[in-house]
Image (cartoon, rainbow, N blue to C red):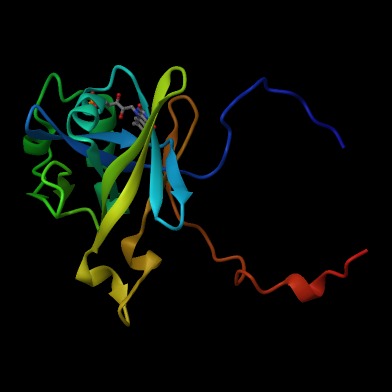
Amino acid sequence: MSKVTLGPQTLVYPKPAFLVGADVDNKPNFLAVAWGGVACGTPPMISVAIRYSRFTLKGIRQTGSFSVNITSKGLALETDYCGVVSGSKTNKVIDCDFKIFYGNLTHAPMIEQYPINLECNVVHLLQLGSHYLAIGEVLETYISEDCLTNGEPDVMKVNPISYIEGQPGDYYCLGEKVSKAFQHAKKFKKK
Ligand SMILES: Cc1cc2nc3c(=O)[nH]c(=O)nc-3n(C[C@H](O)[C@H](O)[C@H](O)COP(=O)(O)O)c2cc1C
């Protein structure tokens, strides 16, 4: 085996590229987030790592809520825009023609055009270093009807994208299916 060291890095694949939303000073704003994922199953929780300077973080702290909006391939450019421009300088909702809706939480704005929207109530806000880790309990999940097959979420219809770090990085869609999951325990004998 031959390995080289790269120093401490957060090098895990794939990372998501979704939009996290919050009302900042009562106006909806969104930023792109790659450093996020599932934090707990019961109750269902999502974590997002957000740098101190982000305008959206101000809204998360003001309201104690946020949304996660899953990006599909056709929304990559809007997602990227929300990841390079700050809501402190422009209204990204207007710039991107986002249609906003709210669920049970009055300050977790969600975007109609994004196929899946998670409405989250902040349960922990941890200062870790360069980033705050906001952990939100998912109170409701919304999915576009045209992303369902037989009443179940169909990932091929959602067509989500991943962000792969680099200089400057790239967006990818899902690749080929490799195998069924949770099926292979019998093929390996305990030694
Ligand atoms: C693909 C992508 C992923 C990003 N991931 C994160 C992230 O996980 N955390 C973060 O704080 N900023 C992340 N950013 C940067 C913010 O989205 C960006 O600074 C944004 O303009 C902040 O918007 P705001 O100031 O309106 O909140 C990412 C940007 C891109 C393009």
